[in-house]
Image 1: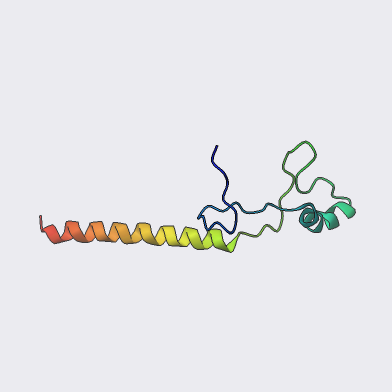
Image 2: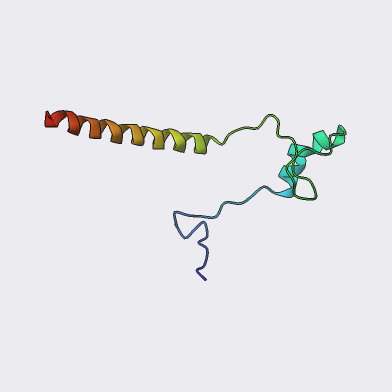
Length: 86
């Protein structure tokens, strides 16, 4: 089994740390104290209500880059077909 690369090894697929218990307490703690105990992930592992979710900026940036590359590829193909003159 291959070893996972650490942050100092320079590998492109570095494992990112997941949410810590303190992060989860900051996110769901106020809701739980307000009596909404089903918010977040329940003990059974089911997903609770998701409200006010934020999208990761890195994910949105990647989606825009991929969409732009796809459009540029289609435009190149269209230009090649148009240049043939058939």
